[in-house]
Image 1: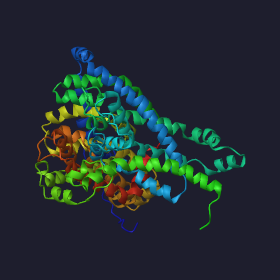
Image 2: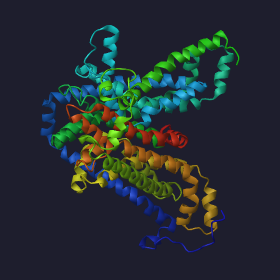
Image 3: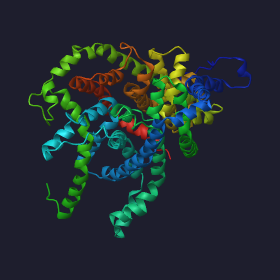
Image 4: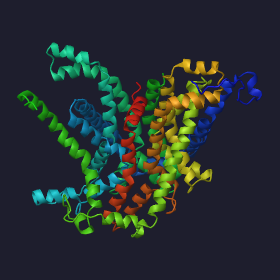
Amino acid sequence: MATMTLSTNEAAPRGPLSSWLTPAQTWGVLLVVPYLLVFCAFVVYPVSYGFWLARNPASYVALANDPIFARAAVNTLIFLVVGINIKMLIALFLSGFFVQQRAWIRWLSVLFILPWAVPSIPTILSVRFMLNPEWGMINQIIFKLTAEDGPNWLNEPSIALTMAILMHIWKSLPFWTLILVTGRLAIPQDLYEAAEVDGASGLQKFRFITWPSMQTLYLTCTLLSMIWTLGDFNSVYLLTGGGPADLTHVLSTLGIRYLRLDRLDLAMASIVCALPLVLPLVYVMMKRLSR
Amino acid sequence: MKIPSLREAGAEAKLLLVGIPVFIWTMLPLYHMFLFAISPKEDAFSGKIWPDHPTLRNFGIVFRQEHYFLRDFYIQFWNSTVIALAVGALTLLIATAAAFAISRLRVRGGRTIMNLALFTYFIPAAFLAVPMYRTMGIYGLLNNHWALILAMVTIAAPYAIWVLKQASDKLPVELDEAAVVDGATTLQLFRLVYVPLMMPSLVAVGTYAILLAWNEYLYAFLLLSKDVELTLPVALGNFLAADDSPWELLMTTGVIYALPPAAIYYVFRRYMVSGLTAGAVKS
C-alpha cells in the first residue's frame, strides 16, 4: 500500500452527531443516505400511495364484476403452476446436459445464453410474426408439409396463452439453467466416483446424490421465479396484447391495462388481489435469503 | 484421432439428441429476426428459410431513416444510450456507497437496509410500475428522462447492493486495519483500498444496470410518451400499432437494438456470470 500516506487529519464532517458517532460511523450514515432516499421516494411512497388508492371497497366490487379479472386470475395461476414448473424441470434436466465436458456443449452453452442476453422486445415481436396465420414461418412450413392450414396461433385463447408461456420459458430458461449448472458444479465429484465404483445407474446417481444436494436451491429458484414471473409483462403484452377479446391477460398486464384506461383504483385493486399469492412467497424468500 | 468405442458413440448420440433441439429452440426466434433483416420486402413474407436475394438494404433504410416509423431513430438510439449509461453510473454510485458503509464501516441498521433492498427486489416489476407511474406524475417527472432513470436505479440498486455487499464481505478486514494504522481517512480507505479491490464486482454490477436499463420496456412505455423522448424498445413496440407494419424494418431495427447488449454481455461474460450468479444462488 505505497499510495497510503501518513495523514492524520480526518475528513469526516463534524456535526452534532460526532459527539456519539465516530468519524467512520458518520461516513457510514452519509453513504447509506442516497440509497435510503431512493428507497423512500420510489418504493415506500408509491407503495403506500398505491394502498391508499386501493382503499375503496367499491373497486373490489367493480373488479369482481369484470369477467376479464377472473380470467386474468386464472391465467396467472396457470402461468405460475404449469409454466414455472415446466420451466424449472427443463432447467434441471438441461443443467445436467450442460455440465458435460465436451467442446461442442461449451459452444452450445455460449449460444444458449443468447435469449437471456438479448432484449425481449425484438425477439417477442419476431415470434409474434412467426406465428402469424398467413405469413408466419410456422404456418408456411406446416402448409408445405401437410398442404393444410396451421392453427391461428394467437387467435384461440388457450393456444395464445400457451404461446405466451412458451415465450416466457424461451426467455428465462437460460438464466435458471445457468444457476442450476452452478449448483451442480458445487457437488463434490468424489461422491459420483464412489457411486460409480458401487455400480450405480445414472438415475440412481441423480436420485441419491444430485437431487438431495440440489433440492434447496431448486426450491428457492422456483419461488423466486414465481415472484418474477408475476411481474413479467412483456411475454404476454407483446405477444398477444392480452387478446383475443382480453382473454389472455395475466394480473400484471391487467393492472397496466386499467392504468392505461385511467382506472388507477382498479389497477391497484387487482394488484392488491394478488397479494395473498405474493406475500407468502416474499416471506419465505426473505427468511431464506436474509440470514 | 482415436476411433470412439460403441459405448462412447452411444453417449455422444444421446447428448446430440438433447443438443440439437436445444440449438433449434434457442436460435429459431433470433434467426427469424435476422432472416427478416436481410430479406427484401417480397422475400420476407414468402416463408423461405433463406432469402433468394439476401441484402443489407434494410439496414441502409434504417440508418438513413427512410421510413416515417424511423423518423426519430437516431434520437431514440441516443435516448436509450444516455439513459442506460446514467442508470449504470447512478446505480454504481449509490450501491457502492451503501455496500461500503454496510460491509466495511458496519453502519448501524445495516442489516435492516439489506432487508429493505431484498424486499424491493421481490416486488414484481409490473406491480410496482402502477403506483410508480402515479408517483412520477406527482413528482412532475412524467415524460422526462429522469423518471425512467430513477425508476431503473430503484430497481437495479437493491440487487447491486446485495452483490457488492457479498463481495466486500470477502475482502480481509486486515486491509482496512492496515490502512487506518497508516493514517488513512475513511474516504481514502474507500477510494484507494476499497474501490480498486472491488473492480471486478463493480464492472459486473455496472454492466448489469446498463443492460437492465437498455432492455427495459414496461417502465419506458409508461413513463415516456413523446416520439423524441422514447427509447428504442418503446419505438419498436409502437410499430405494432399500424396495420401495415413494415416488419422487415422492424426486425432490422430490432437486430441493431439487440446487438449492443449481446456484445457487452459477451465481453464481460466472465465477470457477469460469476458476479451475478453469486448473488442469485446464495442459499
